[in-house]
Image (cartoon, rainbow, N blue to C red; front, top):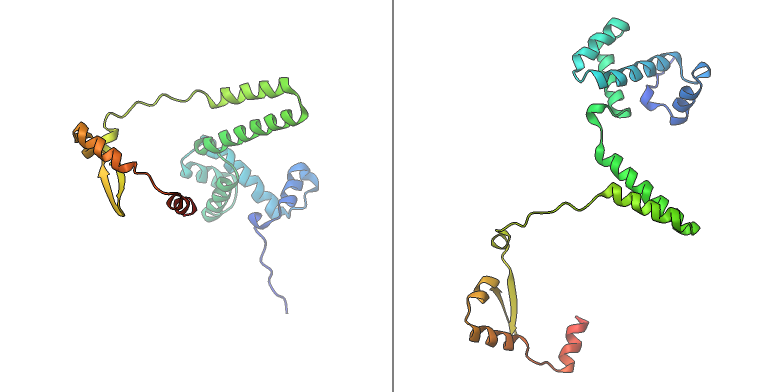
Length: 195
């Protein structure tokens, strides 16, 4: 009895096999149907840069190959997974990769004791990062945040809003401050430090 084996798709292949196909396409270990699909996926990846509209790519691929629209859509999905296009460039990933590479260079220069290259690499890192942008102070920042001062008076904890304390008279503020700074015994200080 013959059992039908399902053919492996391109995305199920091992990385080494695809790499070997890229390096030496004449002696490719990929089966013919996968080599053809790989060629289509590469072409679609290039077309995605020029035509962000999928219908254009589908029409071009239908004219060039004898495959179904479903297969073209599968190839397009695979091309989007494997290759970044100009329309989907991941700036944050690229910038983080550049920063990581520069930091590694700084670390290696310091370990080698090459102070000249070390300083140069730090200057390049500073140029990459740039200056910290000036942030405008929000005039309503204090209105957004309610700041409480916690007062512990003989075991009773009270949260007093900062605006309330500002509105107190000078005598009341001094009285409040003196109650906040009551001396404690060494045993109480030890309990506070251990908690």
